[in-house]
Image 1 (cartoon, rainbow, N blue to C red):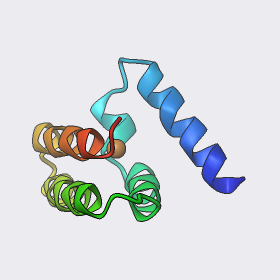
Image 2 (cartoon, protein in one colour):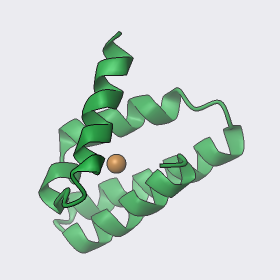
Image 3 (cartoon, protein in one colour):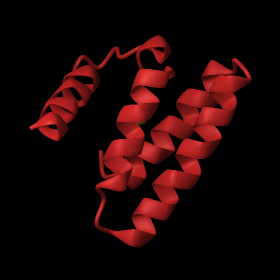
Image 4 (cartoon, rainbow, N blue to C red):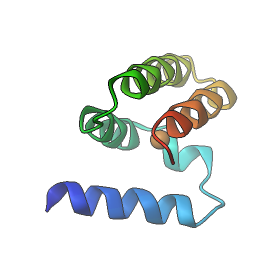
Length: 81
Ligand SMILES: [Cu+2]
């Protein structure tokens, strides 16, 4: 149930298309990503998504939104989003 809600929120954020960096490069979304990646069943893709998300988080810490979004996009791609 909780997972479904998280995913629904995530999907609707993506569906808006104009999901800005501010919507995705924040702790809430990172938590969502962690959870979704933890639920992945394809180990190779999961590793790929984790590596990309780590870089995205590092960029977020540095305040580099462009980099954060770039790696976030890679993480999403590995997740099949
Ligand atoms: Cu994301």
